[in-house]
Length: 350
Image (tube, rainbow, N blue to C red):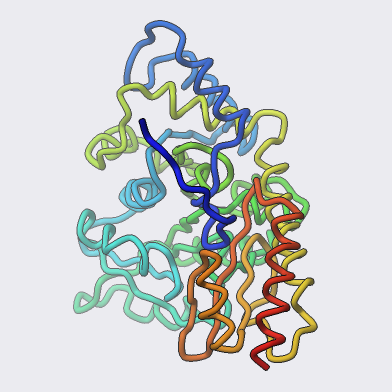
C-alpha cells in the first residue's frame, strides 16, 4: 500500500498543488461507460463550445497534455523552416522547455532582454531589419507570456499595441497563457479581452496550474492558421485517445467562472504573503506583485534556513532573490504561518 509523507505547504510552484474537487468530479463523471476515442466524444464537444463561449465564436480549442506541447504545436501552425521566434529571454519556451521548439520545429528562438518579462514594440522593432535578408532566419512570430515568468501582467492595451505593430509587419502574435487566468483575474477583465479582442493569433491555455489534474489547450484565434492543427497535434504527440478525461477538466474550469475563482484566490494569497513581509529590514521585491508569484530579495542566511522547512525556488542567487508561488488551494492560515516563520528567521539574521 502506498504511504505518503505529510509535506508542509509548498510555495515553489502552483504545479505542486492538488486538483480542484470540481475538476476531479468532472473526471469521475466522464468515466461513464464507453465513449468514442480521439476527441469524437460529447465531453470534448462540450469543451470546444465552452472555449468558444469564452474566447469568441471563431476560436477553436484543442485539448492537450501539457503546456510545452501546446506551445510547440501552436508555433508550428505559424512557422516555416527558415523562420524565427522573437520572445523575452525569460520565456518558458526559451528557458524551461528543453529546446522543444528548436528540436521539434527546427525554429530559431531570438531572446529579447527585458526588465520585467514584458516585450514592447521597441524590443521587436530592433530585430526586424533582417526581414528579406537571406543571411538571417526570418522573424515570423512574437511570443509573449501572460502572466510573464516574472509574475507581471500585460494589460489589454499593451497587448493590442504589440499585436497591431506585429501584424503591420506581417508577423503573428503567440501567447503562452499558462497563467492567463491569473492575469485576467488580477486585471478584472475577461480572458477574451486579453487575447481575441487584443489581436492574439494563437495561444496555449493553462489548466494544470489553475486546478486541473493535467490539462492544457491550444486555442487558435486566427482561423487562417487553423487548418494544420489536427495533424500537428497528432505529430506533436498531443492527441489523447481517451480525450474525454482531458476535455472534462477544461470544461469544469471554464464552467461558472471556476477559472477566475481559482486564479483570484491564488493572486490574493500572493498579495497577502508579500504584504506580510514588505516591512522587514533587508527585504525588497524584484518585480511588482501582479499575480500569484512573489520575487523577494532576502538575506542569504534566511533563505538557507527557510528552505529547510519550505519548498521554494531560488530565482537569482547573485542577488539572493527567491520565488514564492501560491495556488488555488493555498489558505490564509498557511500564508500567515509562512509569514510568521519568515519574519522570525529574517529578524534573527539581520
